[in-house]
Image (tube, rainbow, N blue to C red; front, side):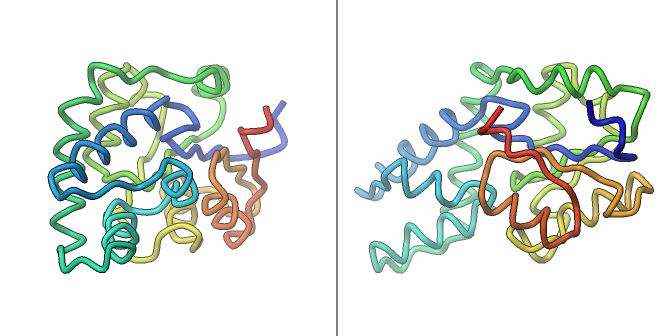
Length: 188
């Protein structure tokens, strides 16, 4: 089905792993400490952004003086406590399994590199991927193309020969900016 591409790149959260509900729960838990809340729709619009950028948006909406990097660290800590109990692979993992050993594959995620590695390892999927690029591996995040360009570089495939699987508008914009084909998995 995707045989015409030389490299496959997958977003992680909401694309191959059902982590979105846990991300939202972690945000609710941390924000409650500060008598803050953020609606799910606003969070969904920021899917694919690094955690500190989401924290910054929340803080700005409250005109708070909290440090976005500190709030992001608290959210990441809360997420790590919850995630391993609840994370499940999504149906797109079948594509990953079908192309194992046939095409180089990478994960390009807005999550931190260590979190992505740990989750993929936890679910027995880490060995399916030749590379993992997290938010802390690039300077410019989705919708900028850097995450996916780094993935292509690490798997040794020209960007125009890659296809990206994404569930977020920022990620699709990043794939387009990288000159890559994409599949909007929300439509599958």
